[in-house]
Length: 139
Image (cartoon, rainbow, N blue to C red):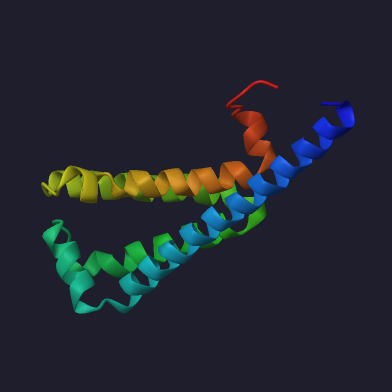
């Protein structure tokens, strides 16, 4: 492979990574927005699920506001890392809540971990600064 072919291949991988990251980020944003809106409008199934986890109904809208703000920060490129950090904290709380409630491990307790991987994976693939900060391979 010549130098020029290598540069073209690197550019192609970069574009693919960026678009994959954007898609993963959009999926994360849509999921978190839906979750935040559901907490703000408080349908019965959300209230029931929250109470089963050991929380009072009065905390649901506050969680929705925190989730909405964190998601908006994640969606804005200049504040996306801060948003990802805040969302990671939120997801950590979800892991702890499900674990404390005795929920099934792989479907409930670890679901927020799976989503954190999608969240950070999307950011990692679309943000060159993050890839430079956390290099997964040496070039």
